[in-house]
Image (cartoon, rainbow, N blue to C red; front, side, top):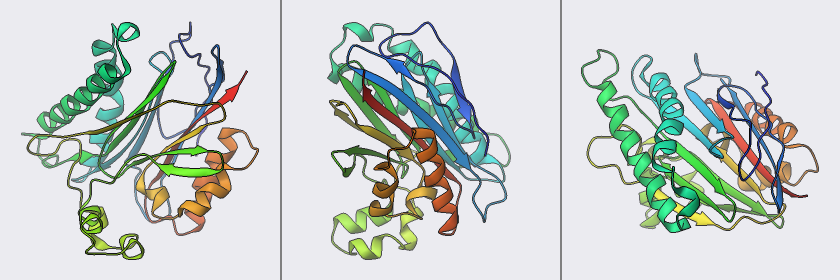
Length: 280
């Protein structure tokens, strides 16, 4: 694991740095209401030969994301890398007028960016030997002064930890989730079901990508968690709550979560981004 640090302010900052990759970024900043601390960390796990996860923290856009690549010898790694490289550029282009837009309009624009991103990744895979069929998940959070917008494709998740309770904000785009929604399998069966890793929607998919989106109103002491299934496949909600409830800095909690997922087996790459809102 490697570490990186940077500073962010919400809304607006003179610091326009951006961090991507397999490492950590901690950013303290201030707004009229909140201080923002964010951290990203990724680990290869215990069974994989390479890390195909990527994370993104962009303080100028107040944009956070996790992407889990899949497909081909190195196609998954490339797909996730494209997600984290293209996403901030594409988001910036469509959000130039964002300060004057309603939150629902921004959410629609953010969903459109993810759909366009999927098409870009699909185009990159076409005609390149070894990269056919490559794709990636994406889960992103876009923070604004009065809202947090989440958009996703795939099974990387977003969580809200508030008042000692953990709420999953995204619904997996997987065949196992379809079976669960149809009551054909139980929640207990879902966790280890072989169809859990068969995605029904993802970045780079054939056909029309249909991202899901939700918007929440952030509150003081909220903690937002974005993560790949390498974390949630190893830790249940109660275990995640145990770490998020600790009075530790976000970068410590992030490291503890990744270490716990490795200790539980580390069957996949493990990536987490934590965003914490504190009162000034």
